[in-house]
Image (cartoon, rainbow, N blue to C red; front, side, top):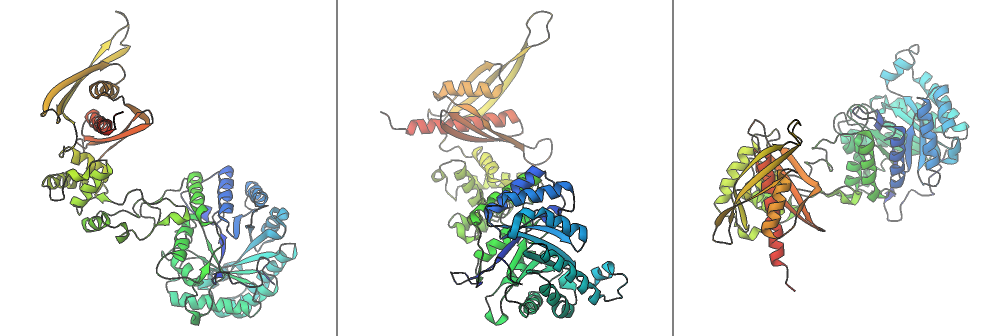
Length: 564
């Protein structure tokens, strides 16, 4: 039987053979632990998958529940004008197959039955306990019966999963089962490494080719698909091995590959689309395959999946984890300051994924380059400090000591910047020497409890542009010390700044009662924004340091602005 979507040739105009894509995020992917979603969330994920344009999207198992049945029907309706085909999962069971066919009634010839057959001896002995130790004939008849039943009721495409095929008797698959499935209506044969045991590319390549040869003996127009799992961490590598056609002596690879967003799925998970698609299109090895996907929309699908499932991304996740582009090795950081491509070879933005926001953190192996980079990123004029400045050693010692107190063993560069600015004053007009504050409660009358609190803040500053003159300013108010600081610094500098309502971020760095508080403050003046960072065990002093640095930045900008 001919696959209904196949053109007369499988060759792509660009000279690469088309690789078909089968997404199982909404079925196998949602079986992974640690996530949950709602019907509305699943529909939003489905729409994002349709926008990417996967050739087939497996919408779920309609027999599971009435809600699942409804969801599959809704996804079928959503896909009416899309190019993706919609698959409904079923087992070789009358009830599950009937429910899948009912859910796909309005899909017409764009509906797909994904039919599960279990083919290793471990599964066959469970399914056919009376069939002897090797119930191959009984299994073949049973699976062929339901394949024919699936294809006879108006469904043009029957995608047959060979569950646990990589642990099955290959002779049974290629000489008995596959010919029977092809004869009774299968349009796709899915070779499943269900338990993720494949550990050899050479073995797997031969396995896929044997499956493909068995299919081709029956028809050139039945797809061979591969479904890999990551129990050994090799789902992506095995998927790439299966589709590789670089060495023509090995013969053609699989026609289709199956995966999920983030590789989410049973146990360790499935093949990760983002890792597979990146590897297929980037890197030193050139795969002679292409996919018909809107790759720039993949990032949106990934974000929808995270938003609606609550999936937690490990920092070490390739391509998208926070650590995937970071380094804390001093040698690496030195080279990265000259050329980002020295250690940042992977850039996932062509998939619509977020590029690296920072490339370095500071740890015991970091050096002066990381400190200089931290100062630059904070807005500090890096020309004011040379790489051989001895003050950088003082900053490094303090930063290493602080990094060792953290669980991760490192600290972000913006924290290093706050630490460095406590030691390097160059270019700033006002330096905080000390501060003090006190509070006084005011009562409405003699019998009332305290209703308001008036606070007094005193700042002792040094003016580096006035012969380092030291002076004290103070202010009072009832709206908090940070607001008072903004008021008295606005009066001092002549620049009116207020804290942006979404621009105040704080966190403790390290462990213990003396762990410093880090503050990143963003202040605004109309449409202009100025940032400052502060680090101190007292959160108020850390905040005022951050505010003062933002005012210093604003003052410098005002001084450099051309006068009319």
